[in-house]
Length: 453
Image 1 (cartoon, one colour):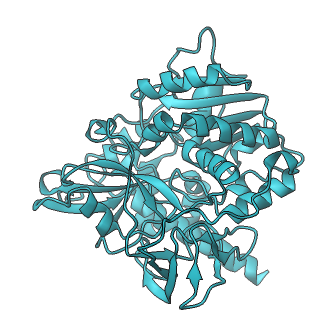
Image 2 (image 1 turned 180 degrees about the vertical axis):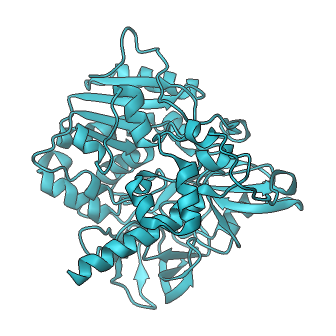
């Protein structure tokens, strides 16, 4: 049962967490603009969790906007589509936001095209069974737009023995600086509720929640008005502004008062969580025949000339995106993809926007400094910050010693790398980075053991 009572105005939350300044004021009032189509687009085949897509076009081939150019390479994989009318200029290795060279398709845009969606045989969702719906999502190339880019058809492919009781839309957007989900909720409320209705017709949840942090009162009000006209049993829930409230496990705890057990998934509690942008993409595919070929991102930071929320075609160069937003200032010191808590530092802007890109953040020299790391002083601040009640101080010491098995026993794999522990550490110990390394080593050992067996 939900912890909501009365008129739903209570501000629920989880225990622990941190309260960084949100810096939303830089862009939360900036309406979404469309980036003009760039001359070239570079689309990596690997831009989601799982197997990279397999190209089905060749160099020199003409492609249409919305046309499939790469197919799924397995169940945990999705199709890839051209964001523009144009010509395949190259298929080869290009720089990727993950810092590696990845196989990609480069398309030169037809500057004389009206860039209309080619359209295709998109099925009517009312004629589909659950298997057909899952297949359609994979064909549309839809992945989670909250940052992880997990294929949506895999997440929504519910086991028969694990029905969905609670469907939750995540509009928390707790990461500082980012406002793209905020603007999507304000400007695409109709498509959001339409996508929600389509999804609900297949998952058949008993209760539906749209969770939004209370630093977005206009989004809460907009969606409450919209939900009042919907036949669905929707509750728009205002949650306390606290990081990492947008983590799905934290959102579930806030609303239901239940914890997802270690090693389990939300569906084990009967909960399915989807990002608001993902649900809008579902509506745009079934109603407008538009696969996932563009997304809204936030370009922000005090080192950006004009912070903006932009609708950007997948594959656009981040340099062109930032130039459109007024470029960066002379004192720019650091570029991150995403927000300051979980974002990934970049060495260049000559990389493409991918499906998982939620924002480009550029910080000044005054906001970035190299920290000197000291020994742990056992203050316990990291324990008070960790939303999963792990012991970051102990895990950090074990990581320093390379005691990976002991870290596994202390549930380091449950860590979702929110960096709350690193944020509060007075000794500037890079805790989350050491956990990330440890998790990689543990998973590699597991994979080797499985192969050996």
